[in-house]
Image 1 (cartoon, rainbow, N blue to C red):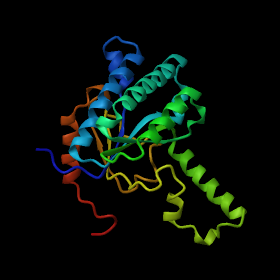
Image 2: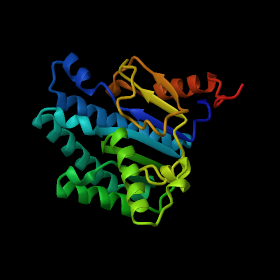
Image 3: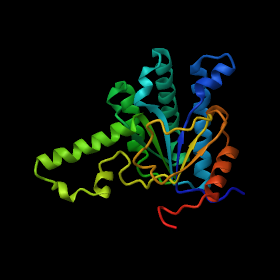
Length: 234
């Protein structure tokens, strides 16, 4: 029996390209396999009682990749969202999108907003897709928002607190993740939720994302429970 999961789990879905290369397949095949893994893990999180699952789907830096790979990722996301909307009543998953969606195609922007709006009342698990997301970009946007309000005279700079700043982030209203998982063996944050993860527990795993299973998630949760969370205390 798996241990009680953290309330909020965040995952850097890493290793799709290497998974494909090891099999002599195009990188797009790795992303397709990774999308199926995401579907499996999201459903498993729902059965475990995880309240929030945040995944790094596409970063602001990922635009440096080939046009073919980017196009494949966007097509997979559109396919997943169409299928998810068809199954919404059954799965009761609430969707949120964190990032600058304006760079996406109009069709994909509409799919994201439709999924977010149609699932707003569901409460089994909230999945936050970090899409065209960069942690530093998010912080700059929040700072710009507060600066605009201060310039307009609707906000006294002396009133700015950590809580007020957090309200200007994409993650406003969502508790910080207790656990961050990065498969693939890499050990870095890669511009993922730098504000929200200051007290998260990090678990790095030597398994490529397409091979990540519910058992791997159980292992990460077990490792989380072995940690001592003191938050600066003793």
